[in-house]
Image 1 (cartoon, rainbow, N blue to C red):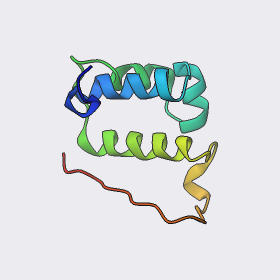
Image 2: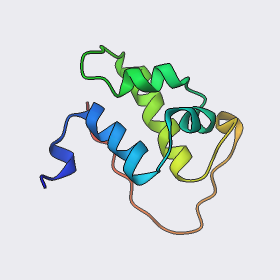
Image 3: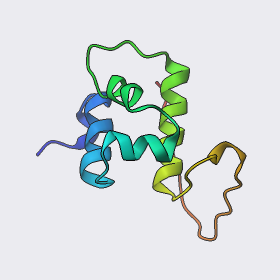
Image 4: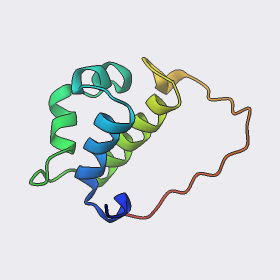
Amino acid sequence: MDDASDEPEHVQCRRWRVEVMELTREQLSVLTGFSASMIKDYERADKDIDPMARKRYRMACAAAEFGISGGWFNRKLVLTRRFEMTVLPD
């Protein structure tokens, strides 16, 4: 199988939700605050998404993966282990 980073972003989004997190759109919606229909749009190849909206979605998904759900905008993330995060340019 090809490296997942070679796949288009909408495919990576769906793969992460389905295979890594094992969530439905509705379940991810509860965790991120994005509606299920918006999540569907992010996972479609033919949908033009604003770059800042996509960035907010990525951050919400990252927060969900770290276990921060609900009103994550008002929460603090305290890291107890060292980790490396790389944000790639669009």
